[in-house]
Length: 273
Ligand code: HPA
Image (tube, rainbow, N blue to C red):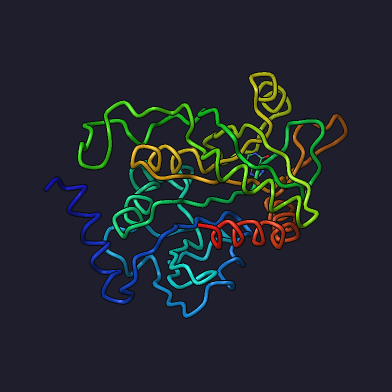
């Protein structure tokens, strides 16, 4: 057993002492988007700090615990708070929980995040299904010796976001009068928000939204053969011409306002699993 697989096993075994179900889905919740966990029934919570080899979350708006329980009668494991590269964690640390959730048994990973909009048709509070991404982060979570038991050396990335789930989400949104965009998410390192020139550049290269998370977790999920569904809440619009200062508080407030729509879509998708 490699050191990495030993760490994954140790974390998984610790969690299994408190909760003996096999989760079908993992859920990673973004900044200001932690309330979805209120939908999880018969839940138990495990602080990250108790789990062997888990890093500890530091950002405001990320509470840092694993929540295990049932959503729509399906066993799920949710992360309230995630790890970001800008916090100083390595990409291996950022993505470690994805590997642990896979070891616990999940086959689908749901991800939410707060993101800056670059598509001129987007408004603050809109939801965007991520249909593809552009990775502009400076480090890669799969760099280094490949762990063949976890996935292939050169993973295919032609469809990291499951088409079936994207289609199902579109139907759920239509049935509930929720308007949804679909678009390309650009993953950056942060922690600065972008300059005007950077927002413009990211739009020109094909991005619709930009954020500081998600891409590493999706890469590791794809490596592990997990199905992924990811959605951004547009919390600010980077490309506006007028004076446009973006603050973390504004991002959290917009995320919170849009959260019920996101929760409904995640919950319905989980019901259909
Ligand atoms: N840029 C990067 N990350 C973000 C943004 C943004 O505009 N909004 C929320 N997260």
